[in-house]
Length: 368
Image (cartoon, rainbow, N blue to C red; front, side, top):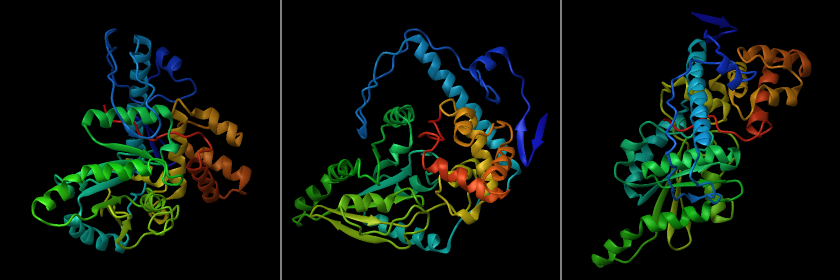
């Protein structure tokens, strides 16, 4: 059985005593059974390129392991709820004309690249992963950059670092606005492509600069990373999607050439949970979604996140949040601050989240 409130579908579940203890002031979703790990479970040591020093590696005791599995269960519940919330909403789709042209040109330029630098939003690494990227790149060497690491918590960062280390993926955490991680990115690109000039010398050819293409979704910080590498504004950059409109090769010293490219996004977004997260994080054009619907879902997501919860919303706006219906919160905020203008209230809430007013937190955790 389900309950329909203000256009959002909500699962009807039973609350147990453990759930109440585990989720004070939060609405439970569909729980998945998570086995209790053994006492002998040990967290392995991994090496991560870039970002803060990984000083968190240690042998975990049973209580910390149980906490980790409990948090994982909460994230699974949240993702299940999000899937249902998006069912009744207008689909989010955005595919400006210049992206189709860019995609065609980018496929041609890929043939010239020695290494590809894929930039994703650290708040939503899975949602900013293009479904066709692997097929486009083939066996070409790739570096994954999770930009905006300053917008996620240390716990979020560690979770993603562990996930990609287990996959053997080379990942750099960066902050394109402040330049953190950019020099490590430059060095790693040169190291991965060192065999290019070894092969050229063997053929009697002169060495050339390493060619690195920077690709990714709109507004994930590709141009900002290049500008920080060059220490000057060579690429147009702004905090909104669709600013870069054409491919551009840029020389970085004698050893590296960078390709700045417009954001690429699928012609049709089938995963509407991912589309909503793109809208929340401003990684998709504003005209593609209903601001009130997106802000309402954000309220419900924040209310369920243990690191934020309803308390953060109340502290910010002095309004009690209904964890089951974010639109009620938007309506109250509109009456309190904007003379009943729901659009302005929704935009304020989204802006506050993007500026970290509720604390820095990711909206995704690695798949189990």
